[in-house]
Image 1 (cartoon, rainbow, N blue to C red):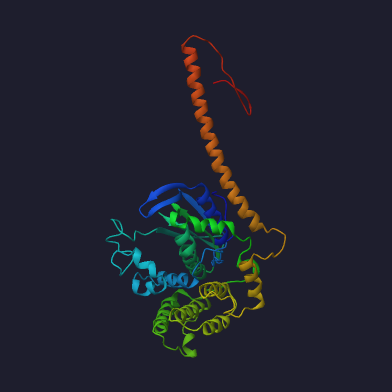
Image 2: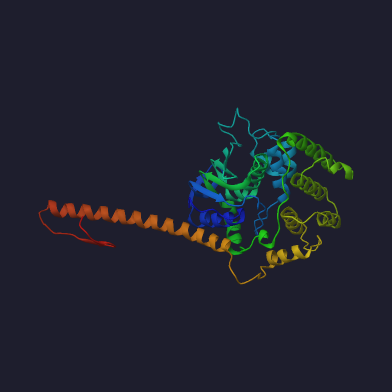
Length: 382
């Protein structure tokens, strides 16, 4: 798999989920039974296509945005994060912070999973490599990791005036917990060939210089704090976050806070509908229509209608196959074939060893019998 690059995180997630669910070794971890692939290299070719929408996965785009901003700001407090990721405190030793260097290398709930990152510029593109000691494919890989690191990669690309290259994840333990076995089967049984990007959606662009980044992040968190306290933000103040991507993040966080505070669905629908078309908006529509159990709560543009007709109902888009679809299928088949060949080779080695032992016994007994094996390339005399 070393030379395979998945087109998007969606392709990577579906192929790797099938691989770990079908061929992973069942092991007992500190968090219970799981199926594991060890080690694993996963590469993604277009990291900016970061929004993962897969039936039955139930991603929360708002939580991914909040945790990404928390990471970019270098924060480790639960006071911010637990508003958007309530179970975050389950992985904190004291319920106050994550990642305490004094405790992280001992018995701890929050031993870091992401251990090392490197950005490398080659031929006008910045590639990012991430080393992980452990990665839960459901909550980690497809929940936050690929989203957050793709935003960091875009920040680096902007700062170095380069394009985004590939992202490579070197994962020592890629695993699927027993609590997610049934969900994995539902996802794999109802997968789609197309992603939202096949429908022409794109992501807002990051455009903040390194010199202005701290000021923009400070402004973002000041406004977020006022939003969470239900203050009304004057129209003129939204522009203090002068970045298309970060500004869209803030607008979506504001909508999510209204959702958490119990706002009427009509209000939420109007606010989402007012956003410019983007992959993030599509992610917000998917989350709210699912959580409110109302597919009509957000007015859809014809563009969005086409996607959701396909996403919700599995409607046929066309009867052709794109390179990305074929690539994903071949990636899974290649992985299965490689593992099957390894098992066959090991079985052949064991059989040959038994044959050599038998041959040696025959010779030592003076029988003088000559044993021959016929392989694919002719006769082999042990």
